[in-house]
Length: 115
Length: 114
Image 1 (cartoon, rainbow over the protein chains, first blue to last red):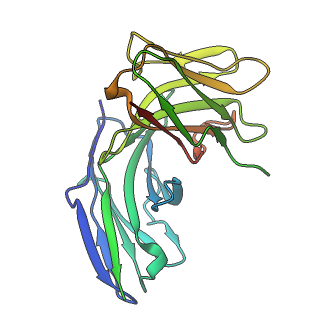
Image 2: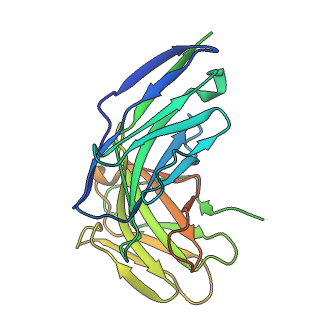
């Protein structure tokens, strides 16, 4: 079974600064996807960024980028120029490209943005 | 396009009652997933359904919990004889027929058991 580990329960960053959230995972599969979801206090689950395991290039979405290290099974999220609206719980998630279709989530990192 | 719609947003039940949670997927999506989020935890997979079929229910408790996704109408997650430990946020997600597409989440139903 796949597992996803987020070792930072809480992180804080000064507005306009950069922060990196860590995520590691364990799998024996070679074909999979990794995601970062954001959950603000409203409790919505918002997709932030997605990475296909077969792609070597790191995904980027505006101020959000990932550092995907397949051999190390590491998938960190970097948020540049942090904004107050980035404050939320961030979840890393694993998705098998096989038939399973279920997402496996980490326990989350609560990000605080300081003005 | 409307996203995934879940209702009710909040549901309060007394111990022993039944809870019914509804989920209407994104229009055109034929796959539905239910996840449970306990306080201070990440989401845990419960069940994956296609129209009229349960594909994977490996994350759903064997007793008291059931799910359906009928040909017409929303997907329903039913919890019978609720207990305090069922208090959680229940999220529904949907995806299209094509494989490996991101799941779109609803806003969740927060279930509180008195």
